[in-house]
Amino acid sequence: MAKAKPNGNFNITVTTLAGLEEVLAEELRALDMEYIKVGTRAVTCSGNLRQLYEANLWCRTAIRVLKPFRNFKARDEKDLYEQVQKIDWSQYLDLDQTFAISAAVSHSTFEHSLYVAQLTKDAIVDQFRKATGQRPSVDKVHADVRFNLHMHENMVTLSMDSSGDSLHRRGYRLQTNVAPLNEVLAAGIIKLTGWDKKSSFIDPMCGSGTFLIEAAMMAQNIAPGLYRRDPYGFESWKDYDASLFEMLWKTAEAKASFDPKAAIVGYDIDPDYVQAAQNNIENAGLENVIKVEEADFFKTEAPTDPGVVVMNPPYNERIISEDINLLYKNIGDTLKNNYQGYDAFVFTGNLEAAKNVGLRASRRTPLYNGPIDCRLLKYELYRGSRRSGAEDNA
Image (cartoon, rainbow, N blue to C red; front, side, top):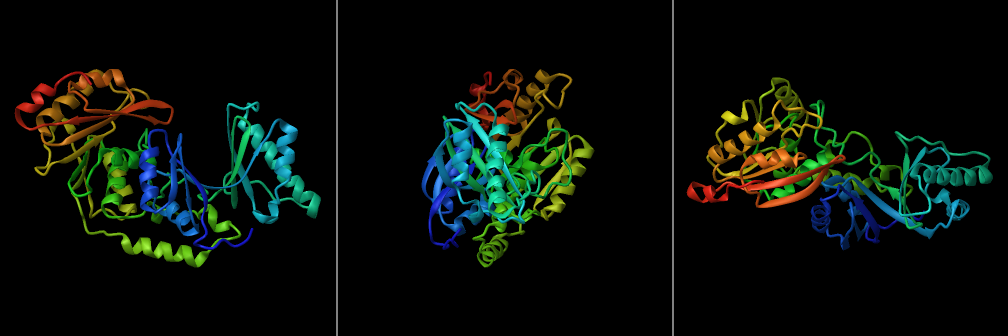
C-alpha cells in the first residue's frame, strides 16, 4: 500500500451506538471532516491520515474508526471467495503479522456473519500460501491488523479497522459495579444533556463513576484516547506515520487541563461503589476535579449553582430493587423538592417504573444499554410555582 500523504483524503466510516449518530457527527465536524453523512449506528465522512488518528484520540462517542478499501457484490460463497482473492492482501498485511476479521451481515443470502468471516479468512490465507508457501496467523484477541467486512443485500464493504480494541475501552476503569455503563454511552448521554461544561454536574447514583469521569474529561478537554494502554490498529499499518501520531498525542496532552473547570459531584449509598469510583477517578488523575461522597440521594440537597443532574437508576434488569415503583417515585419527589432550577436526566430501561417519577418529561430520547431498550428522560425542574403545573406521568 503506497504511503498515504497526511493531506490526501479518503473515505472513513465511524461506528457508534444506536441513538448517538448525530452526536458523533458533531464530533467529526469538530475535526473538520468532510462529506459527513449520518447512517444507522455509523457516520461516514472523508478525511486524511491526521484526521483518522485524531478521530481515534478525540471522538468520545466512536466505537471504531474504519477505512474502507474495497466494495463488491458477492452472489454466493464461490463469488465471495473469488472476489476476496482478487485483492492483493500483501498491500495490507505481512506474513509475520497476525490478523482478524469481524463481519456483520444483514438482508443478504448469507445468513451467518461468522461463516462469512471464516470464508474471507480462508481466501486471504490461501492467497499467501499459494504465493509464499506460508500463511499469516489469526489472532482474534490481539491481532496486529484487523479487517471489517460489512455485507448488506450481498454488497460487501471491506475496511481496515484503525482502532484495534474498541474505543469504548478507555483504560481508566480499574473497578466496575454490577452493571457498568459503557463509556461511549455515558459520554453520549452527557452530550445529549447539552451540559455547558461549566455549571454543576451531579450524578447522585454514581456507581463506579463512569458519568463523572466522562463529564470531567469533557470539562477538562482531556482526549479519551490519552488513557488507552493498548496500541491502535493503525500503528501496525504499512502507511503508519509515527511522527505524525506522536505530534497529535503531544498536542492532546498539552490541551488537557487538571485545574477544575466545573463542580462535578457524585453520590452513592453503597460504600463499595464509592470506593470503586474513587479508585477509578484517581487512576484517571481526576481526584482534584471530581468529588464523590457516600450519601443517600433522597437526603441530598443540590449545590446552589444550577446545572444538570444525570442518573442511571436500577431497571430491575441486572440490579434488582426491592420496590422499583417506589424507588422512581422517590427519585421524582427528591428532584422536585431538592433540585429546583436544575435540568434532570434519568436514563432508564424500565419505562413502566419511570411513570412513577410523577414529573412530565420534556424530552424522551431512545437509546440502548446493550440489548435493553432505554430512554433518556429530561425533566426541567422549575423554581417556584411553574413546576407544579409540570407534574404528570413520565
